[in-house]
Amino acid sequence: MRDVNVDEIRDAVAELCYETNVFLGADVTEAIHKAKENETSTVGISILEQIEHNIEIAEETGIPLCQDTGLTCVFLEIGQEISLKGGFIGDAVNEGVRSAYVDRYLRKSVVENPLRRINTNDNTPAHIVYDIVPGDRIKITVAPKGYGSENMSRIAMLTPADGEIGVRRFVLDVVRNAGGKPCPPIVVGVGIGGTFDQVAQLAKRALLKDLDEIHPDPYYAAMEQELLEEINEMDIGPQGMGGVTTALGVKIMTAPTHIAGLPVAVNINCHVCRHKTVVI
Image 1: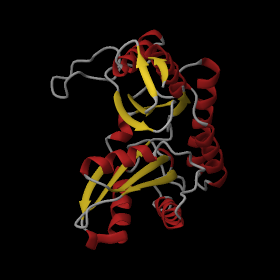
Image 2 (image 1 turned 120 degrees about the vertical axis):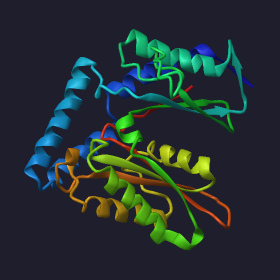
Image 3 (image 1 turned 30 degrees about the vertical axis):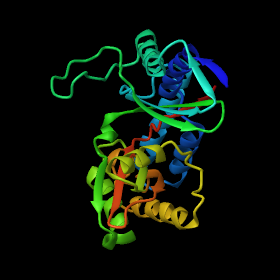
Image 4 (image 1 turned 180 degrees about the horizontal axis):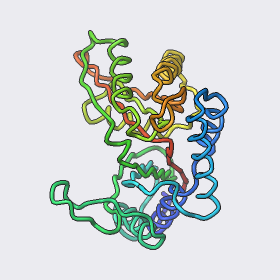
């Protein structure tokens, strides 16, 4: 059994909150560079150049990539051979979020009640997902989620008779209806299977995959590529101004489901697809 003090988790979360909001992952940055090379719209090329310039400014100045520094989503994979010391891990995570957003002047976007709308003024509480896994390590992934894209996400409880065609139609309809609202080029996370609540989590976890990661199942790898091509034929384009770069990637995650069901969820992310992981 390995002892881990929750202060380590607090400090790691605080640093991840800052880094994810300022430094865009190399996979996303490279995808934007490639998109600019392939874009046919002059307006689209100009927008992608501005996005590249924004990434450079953020890296040089430490200013966040986007004014919406998101609702902080924290994914914890906790080895079952770990003994946590010094307090409750959830409190440590929220203290890390609080420290980063207050001390580093990140925008605070969380309201304590969805209808009364009073800001908590420190971006807590975070959305925390706990998984118990084998081993004696803790894997921490922080993914701030902006709501221009989150608001465009959808879920559907299809039937087995809808099949693959129904799944594809739903994904494409969600992206088409979102249009330019989620600040394209977007990344599209797709969850298929599980239960009503599980499929939404699958779609969000899909956004944590590197864009250059190929699905291990050739069936879904082909579906990801084909959906990406169909989405980029919609002429939504960068910032909704037209072009062949509506999405940078489509990522699919699946889970076993009931014989009578076919849940599908689409979680959209803007081009600032932020996530970073450390292991303690």
